[in-house]
Image (cartoon, rainbow, N blue to C red; front, side):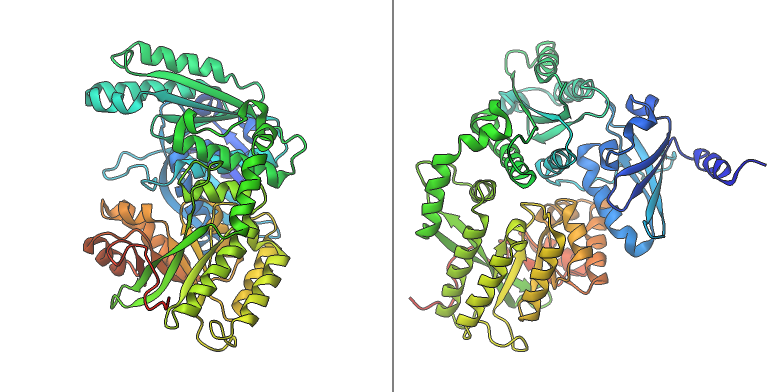
Length: 529
């Protein structure tokens, strides 16, 4: 008789091409199967990597959601995800958790059965820049010598407007195939329309990849409309701390996703340290702007979906225009503040402004966004406690009704989970409810839900918009509502713009809604001048 492990492997391979075992962190500790045929490298080459790297960028949020629920359900029911190969091959993926001192997830990955209705289960509209930058940050933190490539199709809007659907599909297929040729273990994908990111080892040839993309463009009807621009940068942190390097990387990818090569961060040729070196003047101007409160807050209502009654308002930051900060984007402003270490100062300034608004509007309740970087800070926690003690008219004793909420944003992933958990526990003990913002947009929020005690979960609006398109997309929202309910949190759905969306969210068990249907950002109602 064969050994038990060999027998189990034989049974598994009867239905799967790839067998993978990971920890709860998603890092592969065992791999066997047709990796060379499917992904271009032997199975052992994938040990030590995250399982998310086996799948297409657009499907990684689906995998993160499934892995977040595995500790509650004990297994991942079969779903369809696309491989990170040139053909984006759909594969059936399932997993079972083996409990123990170090729990393991055992994955089977195999061909999709020939049955009607099975289709890739990716969450439509999930933010690709966020997913891509998460993988790049993990490469940074692992200490590997990686390289990041950013490529843009200049003239892409004209290409999309003028090419026939068939020609456009052929061009996009050629681009996907060229990106897949970057090599095994390389993560490549579209992070914005016509803008692509490539993450690989230090030998990654970004210029060569750009040349292949240019040949694809020149071989078809887009030749006179588009051209390829590229830049590459080392992920060697140099003298930067891991946290500084991660902040800088996030800022660089966000700038490129929003503005292409024209909007890319200054100093990319010098790597992460080069970007920091070019930010000095702007950082000084931002510190002055924060100190002088050169920003304003707008307030958007969040209502109960059962009765449309206002529950509270979210305070939205609107920075003033600065010469050294030409972008009007709030996200760019916040990401830059995180990169240069000003996130905590900004969050405290916004909190103080929100408390002032609450004093002027005695009947209102307001939620304030706090960065993941800030939530790890003991000085921030202490400063919040001082502010609460100084404003008894806004936040009374812990047992009294609250008028202030804290929203934990996912612009930055938390490094010190213990410190953040302690800060959240202190806030909740003081009577401040805590909300996880943008739930579903990235994998970290699922881990936060498992590790932190929270009162609300806000579902990313891209899921809300997608939910009206079909049962598959609605299933994602239903799964998130279920996850939140398992930990005793209520759910807010953002970006609700139509009565149809509001009714659907209510039917799926969502308690609160936010969006233009209920009111656009503006002044806080009832505020005294």
